[in-house]
Length: 141
Image (cartoon, rainbow, N blue to C red; front, side, top):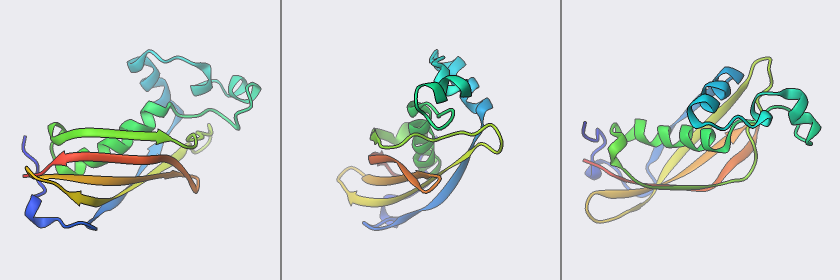
């Protein structure tokens, strides 16, 4: 698979189309099975509240993965992702009724040599920024 976005077609400041990702408790249970992280704050509301959380919260790495998927979907090739890092600033709270929504947007921050660009990401849920210093370097076609 090759990148669908061409290096010559983007400039610093190019905005990636924003995308919303629904997050349901079922997603968290499936992620727990895949990752081996069965911490009850990710599936047991009573336990999550007992440790001071407002409700069950998504795994930080699940949130990071969804934002990473946002970038690889834009590029069109998961192998084009060369570097990716975030800091976690707030949890994604996932109520049993209705779940949550993760909203991700991005902007090209820099163009580098060898068809690489740096994309800065914004990820929000319930009007809270959930990732900070989120950046991905990708190689475009």
